[in-house]
Image (cartoon, rainbow over all chains, first blue to last red; front, side):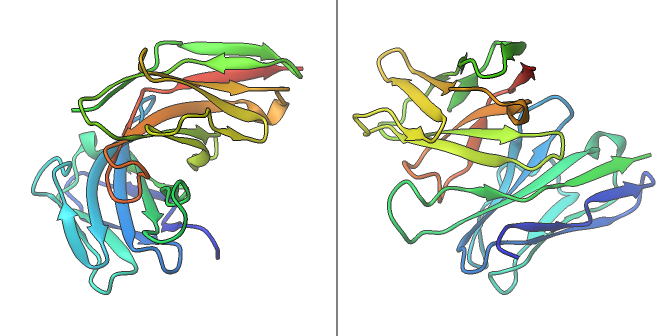
Length: 117
Length: 117
């Protein structure tokens, strides 16, 4: 597809379970971002990759959150020992460094809605 | 640190009329990018319009225009000729680099727009 693809769209986890959320960025996009969106709020930054390098992980709320992008394309956000406060929509965005100024914006996927029971 | 403020809790507009969604921002960065995204009930964040801090002219994209007042630190979105499909959450966001391609976006809390037939 032409856009950012995220899977699964919905995930229900029991408290304490580990989950893995997948993001397929737009082909050729160098930059990849993860955001967390709580109900009724705006998205909040989690982490940023440029190719396979994780350049900023300042937004990860705890060491239970881990993200990787080993080949500079697909990325996985992993949450270990999930807790109820992890319930949110997790959004992935990608952008290109090339092209004309103003066009290198972040394009978002539809998100994964995580519910921790 | 960057901050986006969207204080309108909800907006209503009659179909075919114009509506302005307010956004004020705060930053100490000399250059930055400003963005508006639309999030319908399906959850995907859809890019609408972008304004670079150095741009002299207000950005326009079809029915969307951004009223950029740098001295007042405001970046209001104007939607002309509202359509029923415009009903959604609207988020204002900013980045530390002009394009937003390589730095995180800071989002406001969003505004709910409802278009009445």
